[in-house]
Image 1 (cartoon, rainbow, N blue to C red):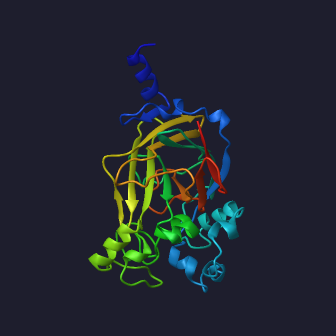
Image 2 (tube, rainbow, N blue to C red):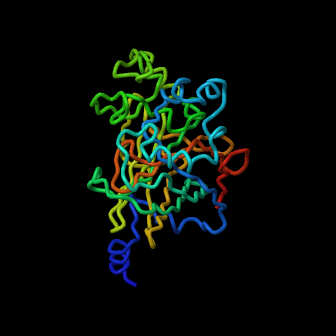
Length: 316
């Protein structure tokens, strides 16, 4: 098969790669030898970090304040919670008719001497087309924390999900992106608003590594996909040039998505080293949704080679 015909097959069919100077990552790892972990992503509605922390709103708030993490209390409850929230009976003023409450994914993580590979397989189920995102039907996002954001170790994605972000309960029409608590001068039940701490305080937070990294695959079954990455600090920002590549395939309604990122990707990215604990979380937008209308996982731990973690990335 010629290079031209292979390209036509990949782009014209349901197999697509966002290639940015790297070899296809599905060919780099023998995934048959990598153990999979089941991760259930659920619909969260307008359940913000402030909601999690408020005892009158969240019956588990006192346990969280006392040291319990989200995953410790709610592992196994994801489907039940998602079904409740997506129905509009709790924390969702604008329910989407016919939308499933959760998405089940199989996740595998591996590495070699240069790269980390994260592989997800999932079926979205019957998703109503919301029309929110005109360009991409599906988006898959991974959050990475190296310990620099303590609240993300305990609450995963909720560390950057605030009550006054766009389309949340206290947004009042604002188009505010995700942000981290400590960047705000004042915090209330409604969130942190737009007043930031002093430049010196923000510089110290940056020096201490207080930021989250995210990777995203923007997908269409027809073959058009884009890989992006970025960070969340005082706001969410894309990082360019992109250090993440994505290989994706949709077969019979089942997505197969592989992220590839160099272990040491440069100054704008967190180094990934053996023996160091990391926290990761996943999100999936399905049915052309945008902003908060997604599915999310609880926080999961990651380590390379060996250690006590939800995911132990094996070396290939």
